[in-house]
Structures are given as C-alpha cells and as structure tokens.
Image (cartoon, rainbow, N blue to C red; front, side, top):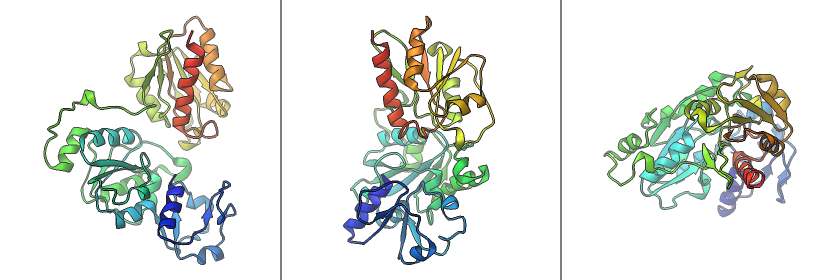
Length: 346
C-alpha cells in the first residue's frame, strides 16, 4: 500500500520513477532485480517503503551515501496538521482508534489507516499516525508534535537483528516535540488538546478494532473469539491473561515464529492447544502444553474441534504474523470467522 501511494504521489508531481519490488509489478518501469550501486547512483532520490530490510538487501551499506526519503519524511515536510505518532509492541492500533473517536477533526494514518501520502493536507486538523519500528528506524528526523510510546516487548528481531536495535528504533518517537508513555485515550486527549474531554463518550463506549478479541457466535451458540491481530507472543499472552477461563476451551495458534526468535512458549489456561498451518511443525517444537494437536490447515482444525464432544469456547489467537499462510491478519481473521459460520452453523 505504501509503494502504491508513492506511485500516485510521484505521478501527481510529474516525477519520473522506477519501481523495485521482489514480486512482479504490472508497471512499465518496474523490475525485480536488485539495483546495484551503479544503478542506484543514477537516481536523484530513493523513496523507501518501511518493510525494506536494508541490512539484508545491501549488507555492503551501498545506500549509505544515497539520499532517500520515506513517506513519513514527505508528510512531515508538506502536511500542516497537528501530528500525533503512536507506537508500541502491542496496542497501538487500538490506541489510534480510540483517540480518533475522541478528537474531532482527526484522521488515522500510517501503519494502520490511510497511507500518509494520500492524506497530505486533507483538511483534517489532527493526524494520528500509527508508527512501526520499521518506519521509525528509517525516518530522517522526528517532526511529530506529540509522540506516544505505549510499551516495548521482544518483536521483529528477524528484521532488526537484536532487541536493542528494535528498542532504539521505537525510542526515536521520544524525540517528538512532546512525548509520553500514557495509554489512556482520555488522558492523552487532555495532554494533546490542553483540556479534559467534555463529550458524551465513556471508556465503555469506545469501539474496538475488528480481529482484536472479537466475538463471533454462529447460530448454534458456540463461543468463538477472533483475535487474529495477535501477531506476537506477548499479544497472545495478553489474551490468555485477560479472558476468563470460561471463555475458551480450545486455543488455536499459527503463523511464522521467526519474528521473535524465542526458544519455547509455555501455554496455560486452555484444555487443548491446536497448532496449524505451514509452520505447524516448527511451532509444535516451541509450544509447551500437555494436550497439543497439529493440523495442516485452519479448516481441518475447526472440523476436528466440531467432532469433539466438548466444542464450546474457541480462542483463535495465533500469536505470530501470517507468514505464508495468509496475506495479513485481516485476511486470516475474516477467514476464521467465515469457517466458524460454515462449520458450526447447524
């Protein structure tokens, strides 16, 4: 999405550009062969998508002397709204969404929401920007009016290499004009706006994100919880800790374990743990639970659960990014909800 927003931005500016992407891109100036130093030197500017891992692509530091910008850098230079950046290992999307409901005239951008380059001077007074460690790592300088660092846990070690490098990237948000670690949206509102919130909303009124501890109940009354946005083990632990034991009997885990590079994970709470998908074998070696079952797919897992006498209470909290199983956590969560309806609606 960021790459496509770059293409729209450059086209609108009437700037000629090439596109490099490892995947096939249907564009006359797109190529999938990595540019060497000579080709890189032929460009006036490189526009960088957040997920690009420079350490892996250019271990010889070929980009060191080459000017490059991110969409965040461009947004800082061209947009006139009050810019609020929110980051953290977990909870940043929820914080953005809750704050957006409180602040009138605000928009959600960045890692969650509309691409930054599509929202430059959109007329909104406040821009609430969810920022990943990838974006913070690559931005040239921090021009945020207000920065929020919610928390830091072990995450994205496959990209950053070490926990310290990951933490250093996250901490760049503390270089904002003002910064905090507060996570209560009403207190954040007071700090940003300068006065207490005086609207009609309470904490209980704030709408939560889809795919975050989202109840999905088919017609037969089965209690199923879609927590597909759980893309790291800390988020999985949060679900297990905060849901009552009566809410789930079966836990389903899946996804690529490379991101955190942990040795093992002990699961307590659910009676059964189901591990499925393309990474099930490697996950099964790391997950510690007395009743764990391995299946090649999410569909086969749910069909097996249906065959059991004890069906009630399914928690789908993968604890890992989608990897090669699904395009992203949204697709994964929607597929889970579809399967629950198809398999258990009887």
